[in-house]
Length: 389
Image (cartoon, rainbow, N blue to C red; front, side):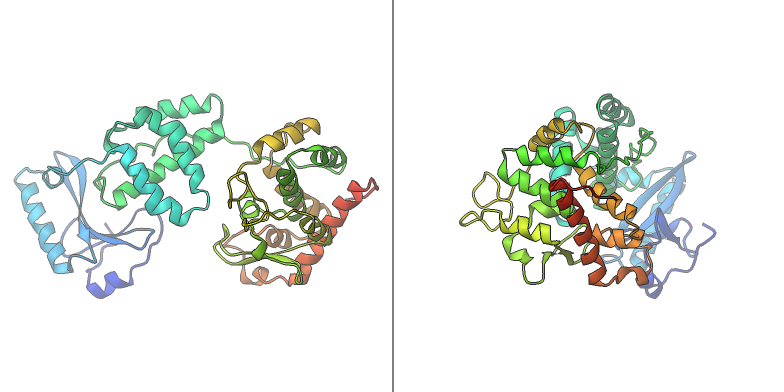
């Protein structure tokens, strides 16, 4: 606690999250401090030792307690420690334990749906991997051993899925602590789980492989899935973005698609090459369905194109190519054409806060030109013409 300062309301109001375990300790009361969370929330806490073990108790939010009230509570707790009592145990008595299934529902509604475009993927992992074994358990009864066994079970077949499930669990436990469903002293059981080593994919479709892929796409019988995969290949858009495009998002005059809520957290415009415009113009519209790529459910968009893609890649003899690799193909072809990494990032709508501001303002013409060049190359291969990339 060498960084301790005399806490004042003025200082506390100015505190900003600095990453990790961010606590500002007080010089007036030993072990008393303010924890700052990534969400911006701030809580008064008290750290102390009982029987040689370090303990921590959350006194309350800085929005609820005044500094004097919190300091007085800390002093009362320390008086209990001197008597040999543990304030965290007395604080926890009578506290209702939240069930794991109940908290998963809270997580989805309070956090995932509001902050993650991929919240349905979180829900899928919860329903597939977590609820079948922990549905009837309380959140705080799940142990490191439980999680380790789950990680091994999933990892036997899909190490990547196993790692993402641990990441999800880690977030669940941390938010449970932040929201008060678990004591602050609760140790996140995912903390020391060793994740599987993941090999970064660099698979993309080469110009030699493209004719077979195009032939397989054209042979696909699912009309809207076929259009989706073509647009995926021509624009480099994320699948979640592409499938949710509405006709009202398309401006044919400006040749662009407007994305209102992207992974990057900002409005983004996707320029359309001439081949992409012509493709979109040929997509049949469905009455009373606003989506460019309608699904089977009335008024909804296409949801899953995994089965059509599996047929396509099998017919093209590209079974090791994943759907996301088509987005990587756009970036790879642009790179081989001599386009800068920063321009490629703008084309693919990458979000990187460390990129300097000068790179965040590429002229629209540069992005249009890059996608037009890419689209024309695909079109030439489609027309069986030789092209160098």
